[in-house]
Image 1 (spheres, helix red, strand yellow):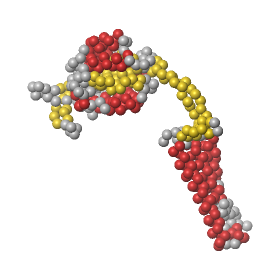
Image 2 (cartoon, helix red, strand yellow):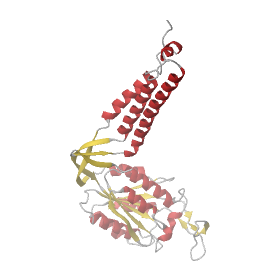
Image 3 (cartoon, rainbow, N blue to C red):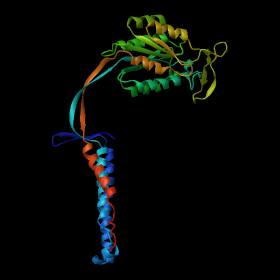
Image 4 (cartoon, rainbow, N blue to C red):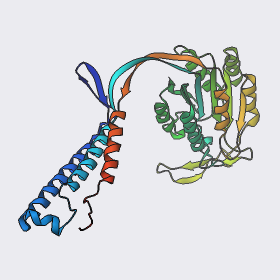
Length: 349
């Protein structure tokens, strides 16, 4: 539920979590039921016994103690409901500065990424690891470029990691208009994303996730341009060097066969460790590889060591929390309710 904001006597007030006001209703019901129960009990006793006989027949019994106890519980719950709703009164303006680096993720979406030498597949594992990376980043701007035979900007640089995750889930090799693997064009496009960024960061990084098979494209030209622009490329190898056939699926996602070449032989895709290492080292970056997964933890560690720049500054309004003035009295009332007995037991004289 959205926060509730309103103006009262010239003060900005609000409830950060108004849904908890339902607990106030519960507290009111508890108090009301306790009072009605006490009144009903009193009327029944008065109808059966004379007032003077009550103390003799039921010594220590109280007709009002249960009502008071229920009232304590009801008011305590009501105040706790108000505290949990996070009442706010008054505001403060603060200058918030966000620091980080610019990161463009280049994801291989060619058919070879469907190989299953990394479970559940190269692409799915890379997608999972990238989601983990986005969950760990703090303040950095992230862009996404997907490529096969052509390269496309899936997401420009943004600090909205949820949006990047949506674009990431949409990457599908079956929807790429051209087959193949054009790493060179993808790297050039990633550099353009960084160059066109507003208030670009001092440190800029391209994270390339691929099996390294470059069937087309001018990788050397792209690497030279990145080096000249002082952009590091961190390459992450996905797949195995032993090789794996490329599965083919029908429209229903069912496995049909393995991909064949023009002579009818099964196509085997292998990790090109040397090619990915060459790209990384030429730009001052590094190559990362985990045989059974994706080495995203090491990439995150490298990113965290880089110099952060001020990417954005804005004035934010912060509301002053006032939940304490309701939580403490509510706790006191609940404790009093537990200490108060329904009847005062007396020894017979």
